[in-house]
Length: 140
Image 1: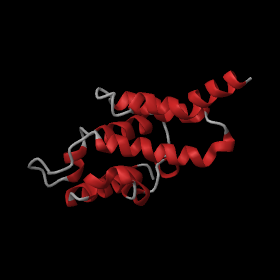
Image 2 (image 1 turned 135 degrees about the horizontal axis):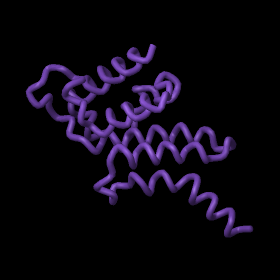
Image 3 (image 1 turned 90 degrees about the vertical axis):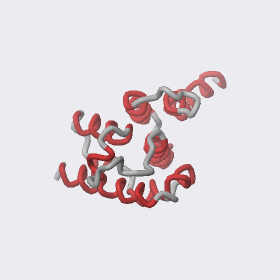
């Protein structure tokens, strides 16, 4: 029974991280979406862990891109369109997921310790908030 319990723990809590860990440098939007999909298999008893894991997955997606400049674009939507984060949002929308109920609050993402290096870039928060607002409103 102990082996089954350990395997269940590995499958439910660790599996999403295997797709998107820092060592997987080639992780793309499909890997991040798979990690999010695996959250469905976590027991309801661990529901608070699901929200935390979801926030961490989105945080890791944000860290995969360079948010230091607009690359000549004043439009934050245009500047972020090729980011893994936006590609994951678009996959969620394509599958009919309601972003209003699915996404962590933008403030929760900005409070993640792993985003501390991005928070020092003023452009990052501007682009993140603008894209959040755009995609949430687009589904209303």
